[in-house]
Image (cartoon, rainbow over all chains, first blue to last red; front, top):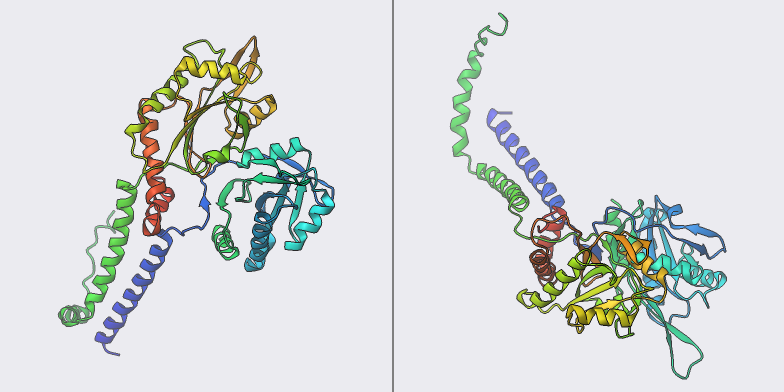
Length: 201
Length: 254
C-alpha cells in the first residue's frame, strides 16, 4: 500500500472518529426532553407509614433502592383514577427487565370505603405488582401533604355516595426517596416508560 | 544530568526525504476539507456549551421540592386549598400575629411591598397570589387574621391569610411540608425562622428567602417572579431544550 493511501485512510479514520465523538458529545449535551416535570430535589420529602393491601404495616423507607411511583386515588373513582392506573399498568411491560426495580403504589384518599381487600382487588387488576395503601385519615393526611397532594370529600346532592376531589398527578421517587419527576394527568404509558427508562440509565 | 544534555540522534535520512513529499500531497487532496468541517462542528459544539455555561443566556430558578398539599381556612372563614393556586405564582410567608414588631413582621411588610409593586413585573399574564399562613392557629382565628390583614393594609383579593382549627394540620403543612422550623415557647411566643417561599404553577418550590440574600428582598422576589413567569411562557418547543439546559448547567438567577 502506498504512503498516499495510508494518509487518506488515516485522515478518514480520524474524521470518522471525530464525527462519532462530536455526535456522542452532542447527544450527551442535549438534555433529554422529559414528558413530566423534572425536579432537582436534594433530599426526600420524608417518610410515611401506612397499611398495605395485605394488611401489613409498611414504611415508604422500606422501599429505598427501588424507583417508587406514588399515585393518590380511590377505588370508587369514576374516571380519572382508572385512566391513570391503566396507563401505569401498561407502562410496566414497556420497562422490560427494569420493571423489577419499579414499585407502583396507589394511596387511598378515601380510607372510609377503601378496605385493604377492596384495594388489593382494584390495584392488582391493573398490574399484579401494584400495591394499594391505606391507613387512618391522620396517616393519609401525613402521607399526602408532603407530596403536594390535596384531597377533599365532595358530597353529591341527592346521592348517598360521595366523590373525592383530589390531585391527579403521579410522583416518581428515585431509589434514595427524592422526588424526581411529576407526571400530569393525561401522560401516556409510552411517555411514562420513556421518561423512567431515561431516568434509570 | 549528562544524559539529558545529550543531543537528539539525527533522524533517519530516508524519512527526512519522504516527509516533504507527503506535505506537498496534502493540499492537493480535496477531501481534506471534511476534516476541517468536522473539527469546525466539534469546536462549535464545545464553544456553544462553554458559552452557555459561562454567559448563561437563560436564567432559571431550581425546582427545589414539592410544596405541600393542604386545605386551610382564610380570614373570611372560607376554605382554601393548594390546587386553587395551580397555574399561578404564589408567594408564601409564615407569621403569628402576637409577634412583637419588628421581629417576624418584617416579612409581612415585605409581602405588602411586593404586592403593591407587583404590577411593575412582566409576568406574561401569569397571575400572582400571596399567602400568609399562621404558625399560631390557636390564637390566630379567621377573625384575628382579618383584623391583622386590615391593620397591614393588605389587599385581600390576592392575599390570603390562612389558619386551621387543627394545629396538627398547620404542623403538617408549615413544618413538614414547607420545611419551616418553628417551635412554641409558651405565652404566645414562638421561635421560628422567618421565611418566604415562591411556588410555581406546578406546585413546585422555586425560591426560599430566609435572610441569606444579596439584594433587597423585594427587588429579588420581583425579579424572580419574572424569571419563573418567563420560563412558563417561553419554555416550549425548541426553546424548552435551552431552558432544560439551563437547569442542567445550574444557570440560576441571583
